[in-house]
Image (cartoon, rainbow, N blue to C red; front, side):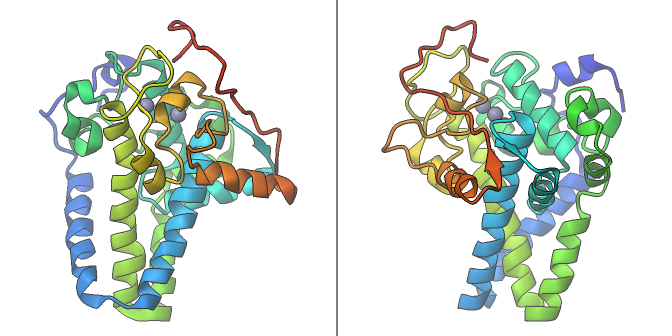
Length: 287
Ligand SMILES: [Zn+2]
Ligand SMILES: [Zn+2]
């Protein structure tokens, strides 16, 4: 595997297959479909609660609004807790996720964007994971784009062993609720969470409205926002990446922002950075 940055800047290629990722993706999708034959209200409830922790806390509040963009401040312990939640999505460790996402903001819809729909809608959704040069486990290389996280041994460990918390959760679920609960709260939950997150990379760079004239194709999408705890207000986000609030208008429902206000009220988080809806964005400054 090449480790020069030129490889990262030209990710669009169907010539390679990431076999391990591909095999796991097929297995997870098959098991997710199988889950529907083992429905129970308990399984659904457990899956929803874990989905909230994994995507709501782990990805939206953790990897994205905190670890990548530093939209607010919190204790190291809570930062680490959010990162552990993030690994439960099977979206990789914190250094990989943050580095990939910072690259996305640096080169949005230009050459070097790891997942732009200009390279095809399927590519932006999941093709880049299956066929792209994603450097999942190259902690040192990805660390160049996330030196703040690389400095923390907890994040370095989580980046290399990101699948361990998920496996542990699976063992506990197996003991508590048997295989049907594992099918729901691991396999179906992970697949649902992956597609919801991937829609932010695909759908909200193709469909929806644009409030801000950013230099990328980002859009605001109410239905992606509903599926992703508020991450669908993606044009707002590209215009104001550091803002911890993504739904800027009162009618733009942003569950993560509401959660942050609650966490702020109980003293768990502080210094919430908030963009004003009226703040104009020049093309040059929006990245
Ligand atoms: Zn984007
Ligand atoms: Zn972002």
